[in-house]
Image 1 (tube, rainbow, N blue to C red):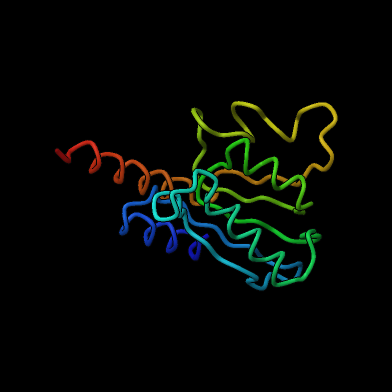
Image 2: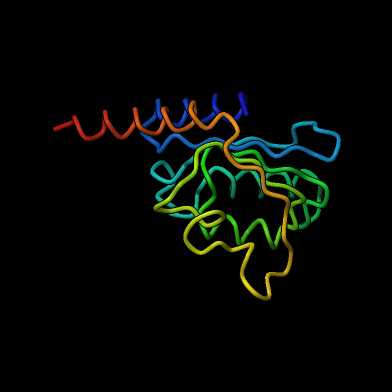
Length: 146
C-alpha cells in the first residue's frame, strides 16, 4: 500500500485526484503501477487501477490477471470493479472506503451482483487513514482555489 500511496501523492502533485494502484503477481512481485491520469489524458476511464491492470496484462501477455492482487488507495468505482471481474483478479486490496463513488462495499456492489462472472477476495481499509487524509487534503486545497 505504501507504493500505491506514493503514486497517489504523485497524482495529487500534478492536479489529479490522488489515487494510486499497484498490481502484484501471485508471488507478490510488482507487475505494474499507475496513478490517476484522467485530467492529463482527457480520459474519464483513466483510473489508477484500470491503468495498472491494463499494463500488468500487457506485461504478462494475457487478458487475465489470474493469481494477481490489485492494491489501490481508494475503494474501486463500479467501472473499475467490473474491469477486475473481467481481468479475473484474484484479490483487491484498497485503502479508503468511498461511500459516494465506491462500487465494491458501497453503491453498485459489483462483486455481490447476481450473475457476477468472477468474485475476487476483497480486503478493504488497509492504510485507510493515510489514504483518506490524502484525498481530504487534496479536495480541501481544491476548494480553496479561486
